Length: 347
Image (cartoon, rainbow, N blue to C red):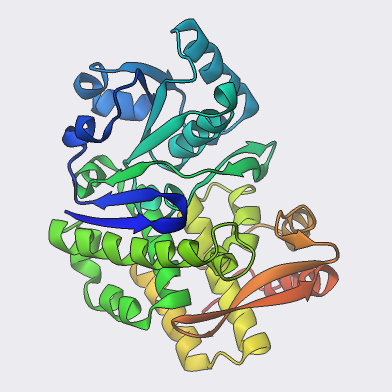
């Protein structure tokens, strides 16, 4: 087991720790475990040892309505400001749990058992908690870190193959923006990683979390360097909300499109651009989409990274190095139209 501490958030990420050891990390408080229906079905006997609240599945749980239901159930169950919340699930469950913990009676302490690869390497790390507003992702939220996150690779065995691939989308993002050696590790160990070989997965999760925690330690409120973690997300979120792609799949398409823009706007050489696309394909992630340019552009106008008439867009200068480029929205919309002219623009 390895641990990483996010100093400026007083939050500890426990990688390789068994979720069965959770009670040694919980304070002497009344604890309420929040999970979705899928997690409850897989881990019912474990969850039944806690006061628990089971919510639905999918993006529908990241809403005001869902948060209100959790608050109502907490009140019905006698929760008070000395209670503790434990989110057990993927990024959606952790997001809504952290959000409710941040607003219930002006704030409760909370922790996570992260059950998806996407959540273990990204979503539950760094203190972002939020809910969606209609189709707009994470439009309402707070920066508030969990006391701990347990990342047990054994939990990944219950994931559908598609969700595993989705998680690799975020891992690959970390390599593209920050770590060429991680890029090579992914390329060299692709087959074993897709089979979730335990030792390699613990190593991979540790490396990905180390990258994110280093960024978060230096920029906890996303005012500079942390924006680079949004590589692929600006266009990816628009595609995710208007297709049946998972988050990681949509981010993969967003990274592919941003990579093509990087050739034009940041001088990324064509050979490295091809390597980026090749790695995404090796992990069975999509690089093409069918969402019309005008639909993507409607979402760009509402993107939370918008700053007046520009968007801070993340591009690659080379594999392992990203830059933040403020692009006028109208210019970005024109480039999106150009990229979407061919139904399969990325080869």
